[in-house]
Image (cartoon, rainbow, N blue to C red; front, top):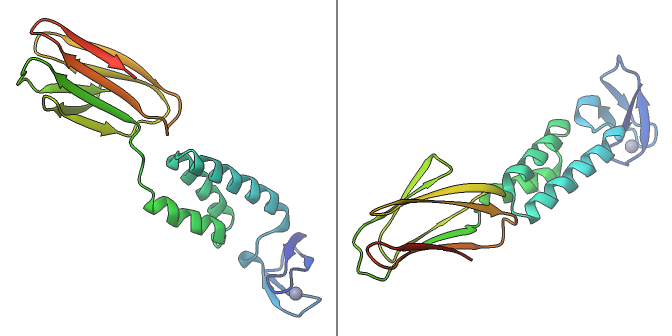
Length: 179
Ligand SMILES: [Zn+2]
């Protein structure tokens, strides 16, 4: 037997496993099994939705989407999950890491940044870039005129901004500050 809820009056009833539809014994509405959510999955759906909302609040949109999809796998008509899906589509990730390049010496050399060994960025002297990095450790390489500097940063909170400043102090000395 499958437990279902009448989409019209909300009454609970059971339908035999070999049947695809039944008529509600209270209001007479035809209940098609594939179109209604089975009652025993409502708690599961609510838990998954709450998890999705938690991640949405933390701006961790990838995880929010994972949980949203889990809800839609169970109930593709879930209006809360569909509304969340729309919000996630329009949510822009917040840049939480700013890398600044301060030149005190009229440096013309462009600073080359490698992020986690893959992504390259170039910053003009006295310019900056903003990035959105997920929670976790990240390795940043600063390729300056003379030397390459390596810095590890830990993103603990995706909403808190970390500012990294590469300062070209003299032709031989550079400094990296993390705030
Ligand atoms: Zn009914």
